[in-house]
Length: 90
Image (cartoon, rainbow, N blue to C red):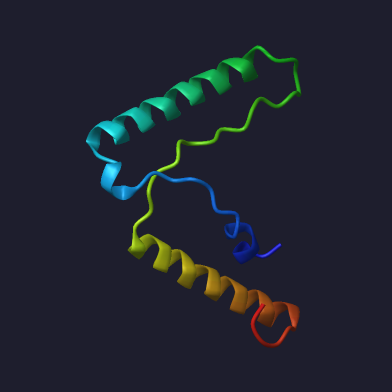
């Protein structure tokens, strides 16, 4: 699966206008609590059993971040097409 196919799954993210310092701090605290929770579950689970996957709280993305991601994905897809012997866009 190419990276572009993975990025098509759009998840909810807060509006950048509403994401102030307080929202950032709460999101950071949420992430830390989830990390601690997942660590405790992992430590107290049976040997060899994986704990829950850490999923950070959604944060807004800027236009510059979206452009950077789009350029990076295009470069990846171009390289993958060359290495796999495909021609044209993937």
